Every structure is written in C-alpha cells, then in structure tokens.
Length: 176
Image 1 (cartoon, rainbow, N blue to C red):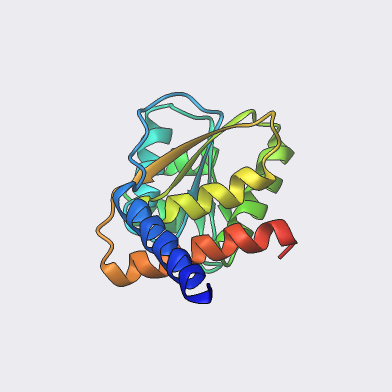
Image 2 (cartoon, helix red, strand yellow):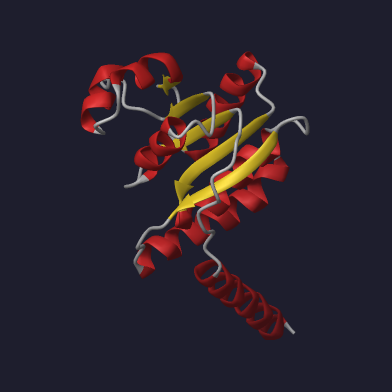
C-alpha cells in the first residue's frame, strides 16, 4: 500500500513538472493597464516594462526588488530610457527581497495609487509562482495580466522553480 502511495505521489510530481516545463507562460499582447510591475531578477524584464510604458500602455511602473544602490537616473542610463519617462512614471521598490515580498510591495504600491489593473512582468519560468503570490493578495477589484518575458532556463533552474512553486502552493494556505 505504501509503495503504491509513494509511486502515485512521484508520478503526480513528475507529471506536474512536465506540465510546468512545457506550459511556460507567453508574453501578453500589448494592452492598457493602469500599472506595470516588473519583478527584478532576470534579463529582459525591465526592458519589457519600459517598452510598454514608453508605448503608453500604462500610467506608471514599479520595479519591485530594486537594488537600494540604484537611483532612477542610473536606471534610465542603464536601459537607455528617456530620463523624463523615468522621472514621471517609474518607481523603484527597494523593500522586496524575494517573490513573496515582491507581491507584498506590489500590493502596497497598487492600493496607495488606487490602480484597478496591473500587468505583471517577469520571466516565463518565474511567472507561475510570481502570479500565484500576487493573485493571492490582490483584491478582486484589481485585474491582473501576466506578461512573461521569454527566457532560456536550463533543467536545474526549472527544477528549482517548480519545487519552489509547489512549496508555496502548499505552505501559503497554511499561513507561511
């Protein structure tokens, strides 16, 4: 009996990993949202957010989890973005240190500005967990659009991210 139970659990885990690896989210089509939130940590994320903001697909953008040493104009220079765009419309969030605190920082930022819709920008391999963390805190009055930046994760990165995602799916309802 125990062998069957363990075999079933292993099979479910393997099938879940297969689903996770082959169903990485895609970029969302450009559309208006009140805000864009970019979760730092991977290539292409900030560039995607800035391109959408510059194309006037949102009013403001939060870069969540920014390094405390980064100043707004340094961001403009690093990403070749117009300084006026950064000055008017980009906020750097320095409080987040992980995906869960990215969601908490984002909620505070969104509710303080009374935004009704947000586009979440992160890597495709990170989107499942980032969206889960944000959606569980997000009021029903705020619409969420997931906008994944295509990445090239190796097996190890996918393996780690899948297990982190599973762990959060189990622990979050328990209050952790």
